[in-house]
Image (cartoon, rainbow, N blue to C red; front, side):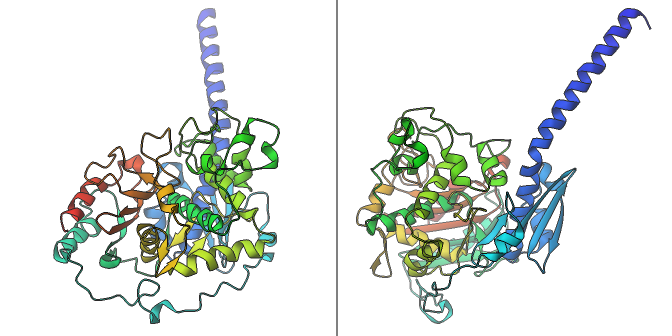
Length: 452
């Protein structure tokens, strides 16, 4: 080899070495995200949803690097440990709290915390009538139930709307008119909300506003923001995704949202440390971080954690017929208001019914007067797509649906569509990630509307 050839060869080797090192460093930074995602979601789906590990790994975890993880399940401890190359993460289930990924905390410390008593709903859903209970009325609402049945079969059995729906229910005039599940799921299966949890966080704020404990138009008064321009950010700015805080919501990479969910022990604190990119109230950008800041603010309203935990059960969940919902917490003990709620299909429908009925459920006002109007008022810079932790249809992003429809959406194909004019609530749950094209919910809604 000539001298020039040796130099070229050496240069190639050095370049290759640098590339390999850079890739290894980047891959190492992904390890807690890869293994954390697998451990947390597998653990929740097993111990909260009571699903089979093989089904979860074949569907929900069958993508990207996640599908290459090796997962060990400890049924006695109720934990999952996930391995990928040299990386490892562990998640553990606790009654009431759901599943928590171990980040800067030990399993032993978490297990010392017990979910407080005092949140018994005082009723059994199996013995009382809908909407609080599961005894469904037999009533003709005027909708074409035969045609709805055909739509249901196309969605659940035939996957004719693309995606992979696990469960489906439609309420018309407050009554379930169609309900169906894939064989491995049923009316008792708790399913993951993903970002629909943000809308439940909205409802918790609403209850606190009704009790006079929060004012959405005042600055948040967070100590961390007192000495800079973040002191101007209001609760309304956060809920309308117009805080102005810098944020990256890319789920397919190492980003703010993936770091928050899989690497942080206090998700709200991580989010509130983001710097300002725009003046508050002037720029709309979707951020799961803001939901966890709001969740942290909710916790701050209570003198004890016991009071904080039973508040959601006693003032919201039990009153709208979803006493068995599990709103999971981060390692610091704050509910993950952006992402981690597990509830049944009927539970999600009941939540939709609460908002269809302007905050009244089963004859009782749960949310303050005017809260639903506020919720569905477009954020000023959102171009009509977003209200307050709810998606809107003012810009006809779903052309077949009416403009006054509003919705809770999760990024893996979880939806609660609320159509007040048509007196409809539509719930679709499953695994239909947008990265794979997602479900054609516009066509589905068009077909459902044709049954009226």
